[in-house]
Image 1 (spheres, rainbow, N blue to C red):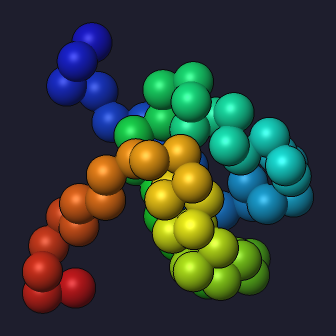
Image 2 (tube, rainbow, N blue to C red):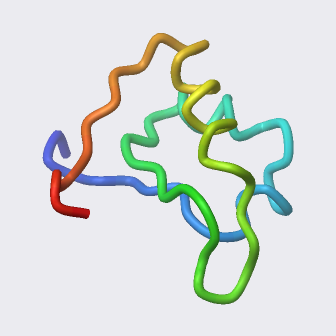
Length: 65
């Protein structure tokens, strides 16, 4: 299903901990960063650093966000 979008979202810091990197390598292709509706997320810079370490490209959905 090449057009499927699999997103990491709220709670992944608690449920996955250090395994978030493995999720990215396992096929996740979208990440919601920052604080969420009901939970606090980790700083966006940590997710950006993780993506840089994994050499994954970053593309925003919209430049107006």
